[in-house]
Length: 134
Image 1 (cartoon, rainbow, N blue to C red):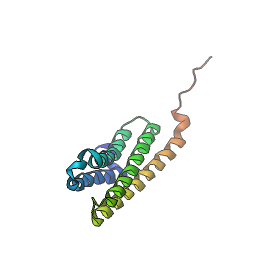
Image 2: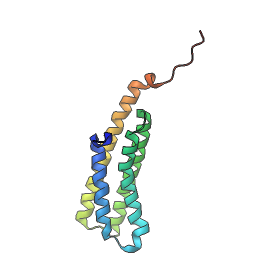
Image 3: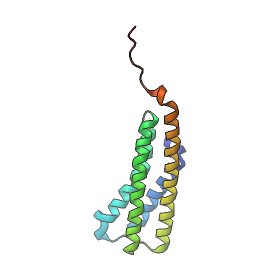
Image 4: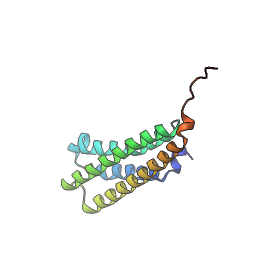
């Protein structure tokens, strides 16, 4: 199992990205390079930033990638709203995707908080020590 697979946030973001890809197949062809591409990239970005961040050294870098993932999830949320208002999503598709997006955001935020607590606990240990003058 890859290290990122242990995170519930990644699992939910991954499931969201898969579902977004499947649902957007039904979007109009003229939206392929517009909304379709944008929501797919944002949903994929959320999952892939957790993957990349979890492989970095240190919790400070991981937190930075989680912050990017949270931004991508917010973007997905707005695009879902926009697509619903354009009637590109039926009510049940919108509800399913919106619920999944909110859960992914919640879990990613909880992971961010957890990593932040870890960062504060070990910040002094992570800092390089100044060279000794003796």
